[in-house]
Image (cartoon, rainbow, N blue to C red; front, side):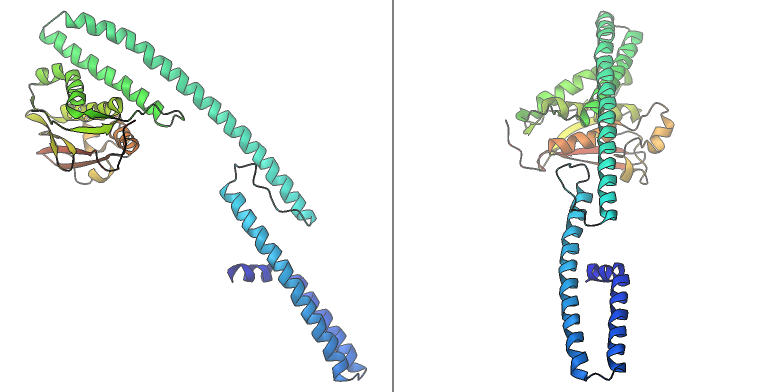
Length: 329
């Protein structure tokens, strides 16, 4: 009905003109005192013919309207054809749409090319910077002093930032390197914890972890990245106390710390890109990307991540690993 009202509105000129012509002919016949039947019959016949033309024209308009709606939804699909032009305006519109499609395709190709160049550059940069990091790590492993342990912890943090860059670049990559297999969680957790062993010792923070004896269908590399980001945040905002790793049902990995906690007003936004909240204002180096990446990666892993926190008491990050029914490859 809404479309029909719009149709009548845009055809109002023709309809009004037709009504005026009909009135003129009717008035002329009546002025010549022709019989009523001689006037009524051709008038009725003309009305029926007009209704038929309007019905056919409206049906064609409705069909074209559906095509235009499909074109709007699939503006970048060149296979979607516009209706056959039946007026000069329609031909001009078709040419305009064609020109806009070509311009959009060129802009899309340019944007994609620039994006690939950027990704390639930073991917090469990230891999190249790993070489001096590995060299410095080997040098520091031969020393065991408070200073070397502190430098080693900071070096691990730099490496974590590099991994964050690579993860960020790969998030929107067309080619996915996710490989889902059934993995024992303890093996993944231990690899992540090992990275921060020196920082636990340096900060004198206790690690409470007795093993989980659980397994999950997931991607080992990406889940380890998520755990590392959570541990990094726990260590960053825990001045003293402990970090506890455990499993609760149904198959939910929990990492709980006794840190400074997260303000209630910040909790709903902690997974937003670039959002650092009150804690980020205390730590000038916070990027607001860590938890954002964790959320995106968990979504790709078929997992769900959530945070519960209380100011001054600590934070618990929960990763539910059975949100979807995934099958190992």
